[in-house]
Image (cartoon, rainbow, N blue to C red):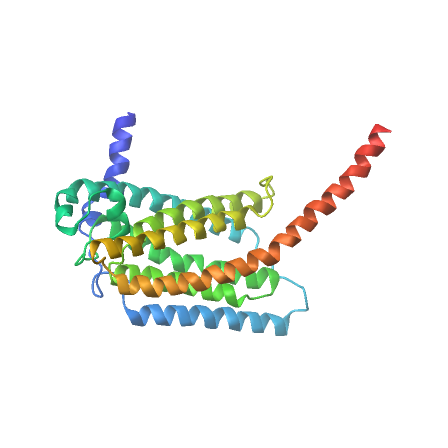
Length: 296
């Protein structure tokens, strides 16, 4: 029974004819044009900004709009999608390594890690892993809904959040458009972290106990940033050793955007960390007298 279940899951995640025969193209994949990308990002920024201005003009200060459990349901959906994409691209990458390994000698590729970091020149955006890369690209637009939720709940809009979400949609697009190397590792690390983070948000959104570690979500994002930084260094190393990796021009632009995101995140982390320490110290100061009183 377990073997049959594994075979069924493997089939639908990596061996289905649509997944194996996937082709990224302007006429074959929805949302695959530059016009769609630019329009979607512009619409996202315009709607978020307009909603912020409208609510600021209509509602009183510090008053939020109740959303019920819509954000929690969104978190659950995103957690499931992220976990599915993680499993799909992991199994698909293993299948691609199995099927194409005999071709690696022509591209000076010796190990699966080298292939994950550096696609051979001339790689086309088709097949299993690019199907899941396409699925990841589409989920970036669902991820943007968190900005709308933030505007309704906190009546504030962060420019850094607009930039990061727009940059993620843009980089996901150029991964496919230029068959960029390193995208498999990036999607694996991102979906793994997102499945945990969104699951945590769903869990705590219903009032269930959260992590004992302060700033759990931020620390998960810090791990993700570190993984991306190491992967970028690996791509550059492989590009110099092998004499070329697929989509290295897009990788350069991706590196600039990731550098900007890293600076924004570190700035946010440095500002938030002292606040978390204050909360911990305040809680400790409040608890100590109570314990002393009980002992006395």
